[in-house]
Amino acid sequence: MRIGHGYDVHKFAQGRRLVLCGEEIPHERGLLGHSDADVAVHALMDALLGAMALGDIGQLFPDTDERYKDADSMRLLGVVIALMKEHGYVLCNCDITIIAETPKLRGYIENMRKNLAVAFGCGIDRVSVKATTEEGLGLAGEGIGAHAVVLLEERIQKLSKKL
Ligand code: MG
Image 1 (cartoon, rainbow, N blue to C red):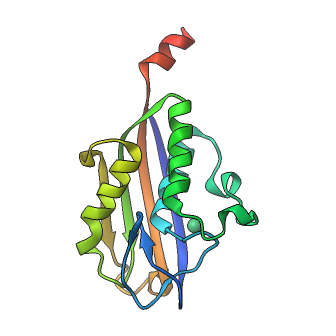
Image 2: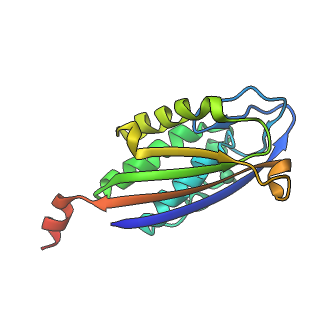
């Protein structure tokens, strides 16, 4: 078993889309970033890379690289999932907490879970997405933050190869 944690924050900006776990959410402001700024998927990718001890998304998808300008973070997640499979890991479960004062996310959580389950090719019961506020005390009023924790399991094929 390998555990990983990821954390990310993006600032609100006018004239940007708000995309969380691949779900576009109607809001007066979106998140600033080189890619589509899907902060929840960024935290998730860092958790996956952390579990595999393969660095972070800044190394894998540098924000100085024009290829990743306005990139769909779900597509980048696909690259990380492919890497995970290449290294012989399967997802046990992931748990994401999105920290946002606004907008209210409850109505979008199920679609977010579905989007991620499709990306992993796993059951929705392995994917948890939660939303919370910081009661106006944290940074999240000016943007959105996300934590992600993942548990990966090494496939038996890889274990037997090692023996
Ligand atoms: Mg980010």
